Length: 383
Image 1: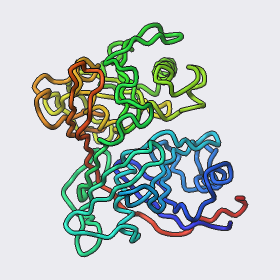
Image 2: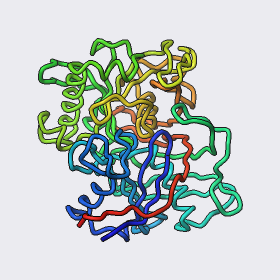
Image 3: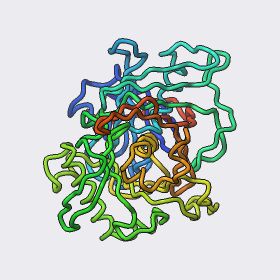
Image 4: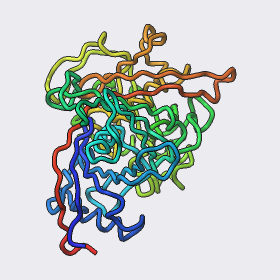
């Protein structure tokens, strides 16, 4: 195999290489070897491939024909590791998922219907269906618009994703343990209270104050403290073990490096956006969060984390709900303060009488996307 047709797309605050399923071998070692060659992994600069040497730009989307009833495309997300030869298929990227709908329409895989085309994508990662609403005009996705995302220059047309059907995709239940909080016994850290919530991706939510943080730190300041990163990773691993996602705390980094995502939660507060230096006022957010993703701090906010944080905020007793602005507990929209600004979500949760098995009616994310490049990626010495 000399080369592969590919497309590079930005989805939200992430960037991915899009490949067609029909051009690749079946899932397995041969496919992964080709993908690693496409990205230039393992190499911390990914200098010999298309990877961007950052977890947010070392992402993969494989798009195939529908194979589940009432869907339009089949979508496999891959988090391509930078410094080791591994592709993680256990997680889902909400940012990149926003580009899937646009890609499907641009490539003629889904018929364009004005003014809004609804693309139903079956995700092999979670075995769930994503609904992606893409604005369309003259048979093509609309690119121009006034929707702005912190962390992305300029504005674009708003693409809306609904993650409601992904609840329990990784663990089998929205609340994997049936509890709104659990006490984790973390090796080298001790007991720490956490909320384990699974929608979009599985998440472990903890209080910033419980790990010595205010919650408004910049990614650079958190990442500069290796001892802190090590503690946070052990907490994430303990949560993964409690949810049955890994075989041990020690094995979590190897077995499931991307998920669960760790959310570090605090109440609304003033801080400065780390990308543009623009102040974020406490009254502009309903809750503040920082994410540990792929063992470093997320520079903005993951799309799946937006949906999961919003849903967790609607469940009384969770760490997120405890930190939420009281006035926001009865509003439709929740504003999440992240390192680069503010992101909003609409979450609707149906609580049972016991509170142990909530249902999710709506869990949205607004994003923009852009097709950057179509072409051939050459493999040369790849299998």
